[in-house]
Image (cartoon, rainbow over the protein chains, first blue to last red):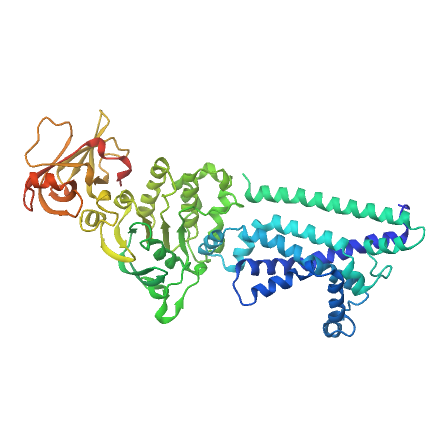
Length: 231
Length: 360
């Protein structure tokens, strides 16, 4: 395994870690938001919808800048989180995970929402008449039926987390070993004389990881779909 | 046991204002689509919150808007059999059947699984998923799923209407067994007179959101003034016992001392059945007809004649077997000079009595 330098390995490991935590962070909040958008009528529903989609439409630099304002050392939220949980984001890998999570969030919500809207509420009603409370209806009927959609959302979020660039570099800068994920390492290598080999290696790894994630999700979701709708 | 229902609910363009109290057994809500039957059942299940009203079974209160009392659907323990089955596609038949049992309170005594599986003939289906079931099989699973949730009341919303005739006659007997073997109230919605005739302990007729009649199947279906589906669906119900299965594929019944011949029935001799005789299958004659191919001849007297703008009239005839309705033209009624008290014979072809109109 000496075809990658230790710094390159670091970038790959960091990317995986950042993407993993970004996905994990998106998953529960994204599914909950998707459920609220799909099923509940509440004031501000449209506003929430726009807010969720903003990272998708805004320039990533702007998202990174807003994160810097909110979670930076001088930011209100950043100071609060540091005081209460000892959690710092600015110029740390946690910040890279947060930026990736925010950028991946709309993908997760869109995938989950589509599958929730495909679930017939009549089935949920039937479950209620059989004695299941709202939470149990969700766990025993809704969740198993939307699992393929959620998996698809996870893969999208993970891929987004692996590839996030603009918001990350703006929010947490490009620090090797701390915030330098694969795209940031590629960016640096492109500006470094003689970095072509590193660029190529990291690019190939990016492609392999993305294709692998997609294949895995196809395989899992086909198995889940066969179980859910299957004969 | 008494089921009391008082409901007021306004939809755009339609108001339901239904009040009835019925005794134990299977109560059929009978009326055409849009008459408010499903609304009543959904209110009983808690799937629809009515503007005003109260529903209770003895002292078990489902809701009372005056007291602001409202049991959420999952606390009502009603077994709801939906028109489209609504089985969970991601669960096997066995898991669907057990679903309600997971949530039934510890103290509840559900029907034993084996008994329900046998009663509904579900044994060979248990490991399949709903996608691999026929319509009739799905409905039988839906009945079983509702029963196994240890319900205190069963609701059925046109459970047979999505099925073809063959599947209907496959599922219908299970509702008869439900009525006779399960000791909880059943509220059953239909617009089929045949289902009313076969199943109802009590019939409540609904028209445009209002209750227009209530009684036994024989009383309501034999009353020419209560025909929520129009004169075309009119037909009286006779109670009879099977006296003999004849070798020429006919079954002889005894209806109030009068013999009736029908195409062979499956039930054993001695069992009692209800026979629905559609009004348009009855011919009237003022003299005793001879040399007629029809096997069933019931002497009686005209009790009432009703007619409207159309060419038809509904004649109700009191016979020893019970009330019979005949649908004839107004012209015939005049030609035969029919009026209250006229002695008359009702002629019914045996083969006109369809098997789905005959049941226990």
